[in-house]
Length: 245
Image (cartoon, helix red, strand yellow):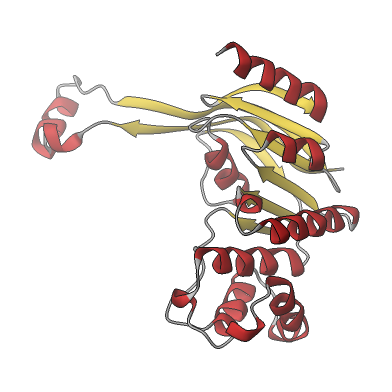
């Protein structure tokens, strides 16, 4: 059975410099029915499904709609059109600093993030030591989060998301941060998660990383779905497209 299924999902925004028009003028134009809002379509008619244990890689240039689509799947945004079905609890890393409080310690933030993901205090007590060890932050557990480097913050965020064993894990460029050794360890952990049955979505600009890890790929270009399917086939098409630009 599909863990994630999207049918004709679109997301659009009303854009424009309203400060240059003014609220009064907008109201007048609306009353006269002369106001024409400008619409930007960030995601345009995307359809795909993935099953338990799949790792879906999402590729495309900046502005392709990748992060917007992840926010829809994570429940942060509602689609303008289309329907979707999500089965299971989701842990998402869309912005590494989100969900953390700079005035709290590493330990306090770990339990805070766990609570935000819906896990009990007992579960986090049992998992905390493993999170600390994997993130390599044991000597910093009483340090304020605001005092950590960006690499340390990313290690903590990734470790919490992975070690709490979600049904669905969503990662936006997080495997590209940190040093080489931690990136390798992160990839190994990802493969372990997949073998354990979790469903994963990974956005990455590294095609070699997508080729290594993903078994399915979604290619977006300016919000439109250019391809979905076998990793090698879609990545080959994408690289051929880039070579022609």
